[in-house]
Structure formats: structure tokens, C-alpha cells
Image 1 (cartoon, rainbow, N blue to C red):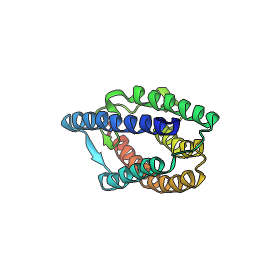
Image 2: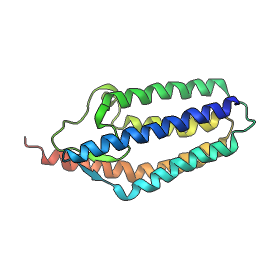
Image 3: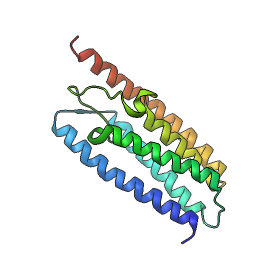
Length: 168
């Protein structure tokens, strides 16, 4: 197996395992009384991420890997783990709002309001660039920006509504 395909295998297995974790966490949160927000855009987001991975799978063959950018991608994976570890059982790929849980303000959330979205945005650009596939980086960065406009808006509204529901 060539390095580009090994990298893609890693990313694919990583994302699929995250979907399993997210599904488990989502089920547990919903069973505990949390509610989902923004469910209508979720399939579009999943399709966009699947298209990004599929496009890379079909285009990385025979490509040179730019090791400096691969190192940047590796650092992004560490940041991804930091986000997941910070959220623990509250991490999910959906927008799940638990009215009785405090907002997370530790770990990377001390520095950014939406650190996972920042990491994913960087990954969507950096991985294709590591293969010299600028057009994929640009195309999916633009698609992701449109998706995040919808998603972050829905999440911020839900969190604002949640803050208003908390007694002073």
C-alpha cells in the first residue's frame, strides 16, 4: 500500500470510528433528556464529508505526499483528540443540547468557541494540500464554509436559548 492510500485508510477508519462513538453518545444524551437541534442539515453535512473522503480516495493515487503538510495534519489530529477528550461523553457529530449540563469552558474551549469546527476546517484544506490537490482543498473548504454558516448558526441559537432557560 502506498503512503497516500495508507493515509486515506487512516482517515477513513478514524472518521467511521468517530461516527460509532458519536452515535453512542447521541443515543445516551437523548435518552437522558437532551434534544437535537439542526437535524435537517445533518445529512447534507455527512454527505459533504463523505464526498471529501471519496474524492481524495479517487485522486491520491500516485501523488507525492508533502511531508511538512502531513506533519501539520498530524498536529491537527492531536488537536482533534484534545477536543474529543475535553467533551468526553458529550462529544457527538450532531448538535445535542442538554439543558442541565454546564457549557464546556475548559481545554480548547478556553480559546475558541467552536474548536472542533476550526480543526475540521483546517483538515479539509490541509489534507488535500498534502497531496498537492489544491482544487479539492478549495472546493471543499468553500462547501464546508457554507455548511458551517448553517451549522454554527443553529448551534449558537440553541446555546443562546439554553442560556436564557438557565435560572440566574
